[in-house]
Image (cartoon, rainbow, N blue to C red; front, side, top):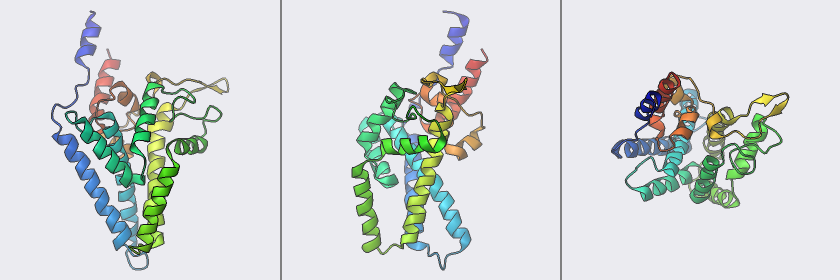
Length: 262
């Protein structure tokens, strides 16, 4: 074994041995989301509530929507708790339901297809359709891959309950569920799919296959990366160490920097 290989082995990421931190972080994100979601739908009155409260709640809730999805993502990777795999699935199911009634099993299967067939048209559900790599055409293709009729039915029933039984104003639902959720999905798509997996254009043509090794990663500092998308922009590191929880990806980034300087 060469000296370089020995150093690289020492630089490998080691996941946390204790599950407490992962569970606490997931719990905090979920509780904060529920709290702000309740405030947004049941307490804000657009004709009476201050503009600062209306807009502030929107931006905070959108960020928490993103965090909720990232928590679901960690659940699929089994990184919330390494000792209790089934608990990851329970957390993922609950959080996906709260996010937008996604079917956990379906998303789980498709997400691991993304990791196994990264950047391959028709095999990677996160990848573009092979015809266009434009932002919105790719985003629409991305949404269609993960949305389902079952999800639409669940959302319709849920919105009907909120409107007819709990008398939640329609404008609150449109603002804090529909628009907020869509903004969150745009953030997740931009930092977690479009930027890291966008193929290079060579002689007017884009690369057909973008394997995970070609994934791009942000050079933003730890704080900016967190504010952008919970470190999801450290995407090469995520594919390199898929067993690292989102809150440890900054460590993976530091390891990658050291490896690149060998």
